[in-house]
Amino acid sequence: MQYVTTEGEQGICPSGWHIPTDTEWTKLSDSLGGETVAGGKIKEVGTVHWAPPNTGATNSSGFTALPGSYRSINGNFYDLSRKAYFYSSSRGGVINAWYRYLFYDNEYLGRTNNNKNYGFSCRCLQD
Image (cartoon, rainbow, N blue to C red; front, side, top):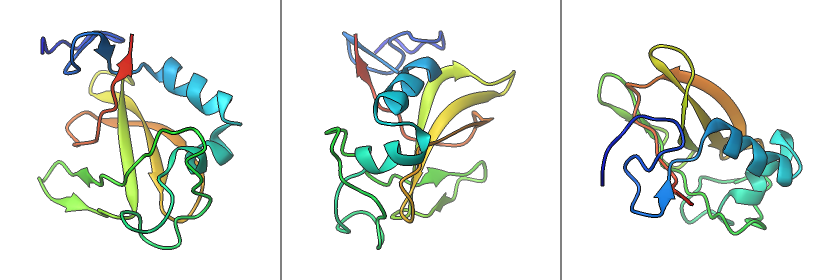
C-alpha cells in the first residue's frame, strides 16, 4: 500500500484513495454546518456502538463514524464506545499531526493536533 508521509498522498490507503488533509476535513465540517453540529451528522445513529446518549447523532451525511477510541503512547486503549479520533495527513508541527474527534455526549466535530505517536483511526477519501 505504499506507505508515505506526504500530505494528501495515498499513504496506507488503497489505490485511488488517500488520507484526507486537514483542509479536506474542514471542507467536510463546513459543508455540514460547521464544527458545532457536523459531528452529529457523521456519527452512526443509536447506541449499539456508541455509549448513550450519543447526542445529536443523525448520520445524515452517510459517513457512519464509529467510536474507535485511541491508543495512548503507553500502548493502552481508552474510551472505546465514547470517542472517535481520525487522523488527517497534515502535520501540526515537528512531532504532531492534525486530527478530528467525536464524543458520545455532543454533536461537535473537534479539531486539534497532537503527538503522532498516539494511535488514532484513519478514514480514506476517494481521489
